[in-house]
Length: 169
Image 1: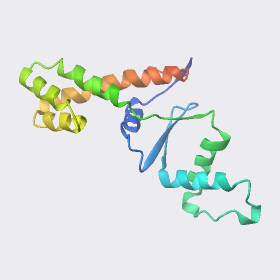
Image 2: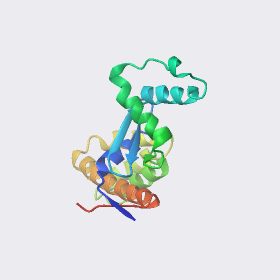
Image 3: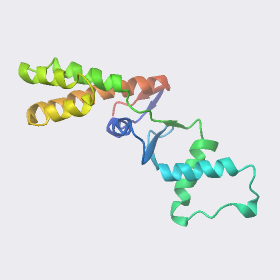
Image 4: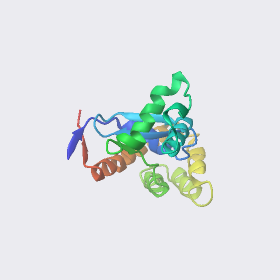
């Protein structure tokens, strides 16, 4: 396994962006850096890639100078350096749900635990869970710590599947 310095919080933030409507995230497997690309840059790079066989050098579309570096990086990710970058997957809803359910079992306030379990039942359970937890600042803080630890374990498993061992510093 390759040891790599990893910033778990950045990967967790990327994984919790489950919509990916504005940005997408990639792990640089050589440096441990997180590369964030806007979906617009990704679309532009993919359009360039799809046209690459049919385009003559004098027909290459003009790219605004201010986005050239990002488009070049996106092209590297999708074409030249595919082995170097790994798209960071969205967090699986089942994992997030399991973390919320496990958290309720740690609470001393049985009334809140019951309300949270009820919030997890049915449509909009993630939002309901957070809304139910909202008026309880102490428990909300505990939740964020608990969730962070659960996400870190999931990230470690994902990294392990890539042959990466997080450096302990």
